[in-house]
Length: 423
Image (spheres, rainbow, N blue to C red):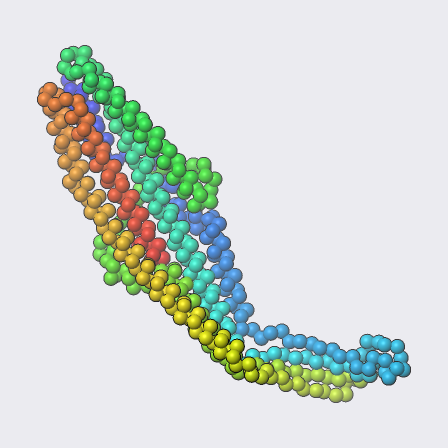
């Protein structure tokens, strides 16, 4: 008959070495990170607000640069007809009625610059909208990775708790047969209590992560989520070279995109301010009604005279300073974004190497140590505490692997936030 202790130990090795099977997917979000992202894209109010603001800015750009509405002016002259009648506003009974239609005309090129400025401001609003989504999706990805790790760690703790319960029965049987000391059963009980306490903490952490994810998805904080099924695979190392990503970050980072739009808008605004050196115009036509017919016509031309040079020069210096500020702001943002990119690439590589070290070296070594301790315990060469320590090494190796996976996913999410797109 197979040794019951060895049967328990082999079951433990299988449980620790093979991940728990995923539950079937259901309609709830949470089974994959993509299900959460799809849900948030449609329902997150913050992203929806930024998207609507970008649409509003686009509509403003469509209306910018239009001519101002024309003006209609009516003058009733000699409403008493040289004191021969009571005052009246009837056009045919006053001395003369003058109708004037006037249109303001800005200097050549001003309307085009106004359209360009509005369009660039709309591009900046789109950049902010993209940035909002990049930030939101990064938080969802990182939180999902933590949710996955807690779920896996909780499952691992429950498996070990079940193992400890079976080992306790085995040690009690061995103690009854005089093959083990009584403290062995007590140690198994202490280990179970410790695992139950750990499960309480993991359950609390899982609930907090569920609340955070529901908040990001704009769902009720206690709404259920599907069990996390899998993590996204990390991109190949060749795709994570700094030189390969630097140009993509400069071209597609939402923050840098918005800053570039501000620079171009500031340049157009400077050009528009310079055009204030030239006059604006107004033209008009005025028919004159006498009695029941129009007998005279007037044509009007109006021009502003840009004599006040001091305030104009101040406005020009202001526009130039705003352009320089926008350029400096983009340079500062680029330095910060590229530094964050380098930092996250390094951390992602470290997490990848840590996971590989644990999976290919530490975990197999811990399993061999556990099997050796098991054999020695069966032969009475080591005590039960040594067997527990060997089992803890396997558990710590698995937990470290989970943590390395979560760290890698969090760093990947940050890199994709900086890129403004998925790798």
